[in-house]
Amino acid sequence: MKLLVVSTLVGAATAAQCCLPGGVGCVDAADSCGDAETCCNTNGVPSTGNFICCAGRCVVTDPITNVQGCEDKSEYQVTWDYSKSGDMGPKKWKDTYPGCGKKMQSPINLKTGSAKSTKNSELPKLKVRPTPRSDDMTTWSVHNAGHRLELTPDKAAANWQDYKLTGGIMDNTYDLHSAVVHWKAEHEVNGNRQDAELQIMWHSAEDQAENQPWTVFGIMINEGSKEKDLDPLYDAAKLVQAYDAKTTMDLSLKRMLPKDYDEDYYYYRGSMTQPPCTEGIFWVLPRYMLKSSDDQIDDLKDMMDKNGDKMKNIYRNEQKLNARTVFKSFKPSSGSASFFG
Image (cartoon, rainbow, N blue to C red; front, top):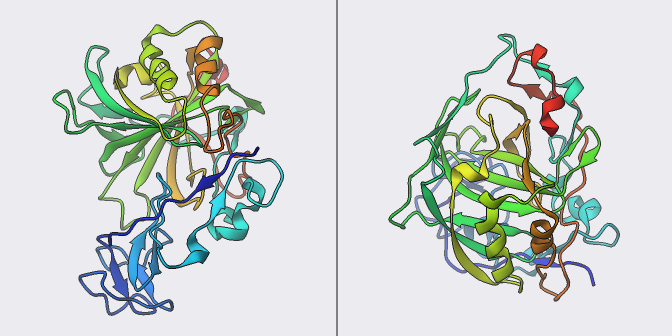
């Protein structure tokens, strides 16, 4: 049976605004709107697709969780899956979610030899503050979402460090939001697809109005020797084999980051990799990978989807680069072979 994902329905109004056509006449509360109106964010700026007018109010479509708040409107109760053929697979997503057919989509096939350096050859380092340390544990909620493994930091826990991301080409500050794991990897590197990909999400309220509110680290995981530092992740995966199962784990952010992630990375502008495929995402792809053993990767593959089938190949295929450029943060003389080191 094919993997099936159903967008979750929510009943509460969100903190959006409802605007007249053209983005004028906003009101403070999302208490009324019509099908011909445009929903806006809290600054009164017309939305790029994250808000929709539904059942007389503005509701949000979250590009991370894929939550769509459209009760009483059956056309928004849409399913999608990762089947390589069929009506709801990635090749058909754009028929229901027009954003998935735009020109700046993710993932891509990263061709390291074609990546460009910046004019100054090197970018300022990425900075995560406080500096992640191996003994600074973060408590994460772990959820089998039926189409990926979702990790959400418990910001109310006593061990929460309130991590912030700055640097690189970013002007603003990004907050640690969540992480997800796909298997196999979504991004290809020189035509090769690794065994899994850990995507760490960072969000900036400052960049919301500029339509660049998300930065995502796409960290490749390669099958090799057992990685004890990631044992808590794979132990948690064993506890959420059933669809919608949840547990918690303690794992430091440091152990989730490959070496030199802050100075050796590729970057490009793209989208979220599942419907509604929201664009305006700043992707950071570190050159170095994390390692995991066959048994650890199998702990992911043993997880079940909504239909009781094992999840496998839960990734979107590479998208065309089109007119975009992939940049690298390091000097040209550094080469690119160490991406696989």
